[in-house]
Amino acid sequence: MKYNPKINEVITRLPAFSQIHPLQEENQGALELIYQLSELLREITGMDGFTFQPAAGAHGELTGILIMKKYFENK
Image (cartoon, rainbow, N blue to C red; front, side, top):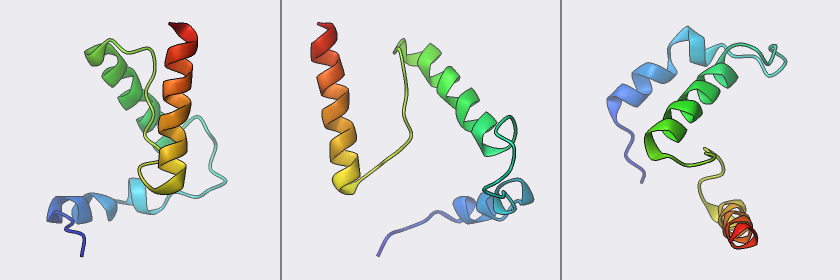
């Protein structure tokens, strides 16, 4: 069974996260949060880009392969 820290449960219950609608405008909400975090992580790591998805499974493996492909294309 997967362990989820209690703080994660508290945060996911916040209205800003729990009441997001899929048709919400793209210039607000979770997308803005993801963009800002991505920019901070790019600045901290010095990387050109960042991705948060996907994390595992076949789609995660595909993401890894595509990242490696792009790396070797640019080398």
